[in-house]
Amino acid sequence: MLRIAVVTGIALAASRPAAAYPQYQLSRDQTCTGCHLSPAGGGLLTENGYSVAETFSQLGTAPEFMYGKLPLPGWLALGGDLRGAAGYFRTPDTAVVAIPMQADVYAHATFGGFSLHVTVGGRPAQWITNNGTPGVLDRLWSREHYVMWQQDPASREGLFVRAGRFMPVFGLRFAEHPDYTRRFGGLPLYADTYGAAAEYVTQAWEAHVTGFLEDPLIDPVVHDTGVAAYAELRPSSQLQVGGELMVTRADGHNRVRGGATAKLYLPSADTLVQAELQLAHQQVDGSSGPNQIVGYVMGSKFLGSAFLLDVGLGHYDENIAIKGLDRDAIDVNLHWFLTSHAELVWQNRLEGLGVGQSPGGPTGAWSLLHAHYRL
Image (tube, rainbow, N blue to C red; front, side, top):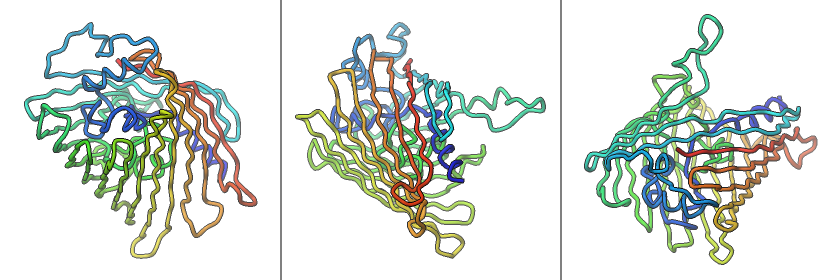
C-alpha cells in the first residue's frame, strides 16, 4: 500500500492546466489581475501581462496571440497553452516517461461590463467505447466556461462576479498542481466545477467567496459541494498575509479547511518567499473523523531576466492521530523563459512517506523536462 501511495502521488505530475505563477505577485505586480483577465489569475493575459512576458524572457519576441500576426477586434481575446514533459520517474520502480500534459485554447469576449470566457481542450478519458478505446468526444471538454460582470471595465480592480465552471479561488494557487497545498488542500487537478463567485480586488487587499456544486455532468475528481473564502491583505508592497476557509459536504461526510498564507518579497535579493499552512477536519455522518495538516513553503529566486529558480518544501499528514501516515517532499524547479511564448522547466522532486519514522515508507522521485508554449 505504501508503494501504491507513492506511485499514485508521483504519477499525478503527469499533467496540469495552465495557471498563473504566484511568484510574480509582489515581485513584479501587486495583483493577479494586473497581468490576467481572470480575477483569479491564470490563462489569458492583459496588455500588462504581455509586457511582462516579453520583458522577462531571453529573446523577447512579440507577446500577443500568434505574435500579433492575427489581428483581433478589441472585444475579443484568444489564446492557448500546449505542454508536454519527458524524463525519469522512480516510484520506487524506475521508468523513462513521455507525458502529454495540456492542449487548451481560450476565448474571452467582452461586452461592456460583461464578458464570456470559454476554455476548450483535451482531458483524460472517462468512458471506453465498445471496441475498448476512448471516444473522440470523451477526449475533449470545456474545463472552464463562465460569464462575468466587472464593476469597472476600464480598470483591473473593483468587484467581479462570475457564474459557470471554474476552479474556486482558495490559497496561493500554485501553478504546479503536485504542490501539497494544491494536491491535498481541496483544489487538486481537474477540481474545476460549477459555481458562482463574488470577488473584490484592489492594490491593498482582495477577497474571493465562491459557492460551488459537485459537477452534475461528468464523474468529477472532487465530489464536493460547499463554499470557499479567501482574502489577502498587503500592508506594504513587499508583504502579503491571507486567510482561507472552505466548508464542503460529499458522500456523507463534512469537511472544514482553514488556513493562512503569507508572501514576502526581498528586493535586494530579487527573491520571493511564500507559504501556506492548512488544517482540515472531517466529520463522517456524525462521528468524528481525522484531523489533517498540509503545508507548503516555496522560495523563488529570479536569476536575471529569463531564469527563475524555485525550491519548495511540502508536508502532509492525513491523520495526525496515526503515526506513519505523513509524507514530505522537496521540489527544485528551474524555469527558462526562452521567448515571450516559450518556456522550459526542469522539474525535480524527492518524496517519502513516514520520513524520520522507523520503519519509514518508500521514497519516490522524478526529474522531468517540461516544455510550455503559449499561443
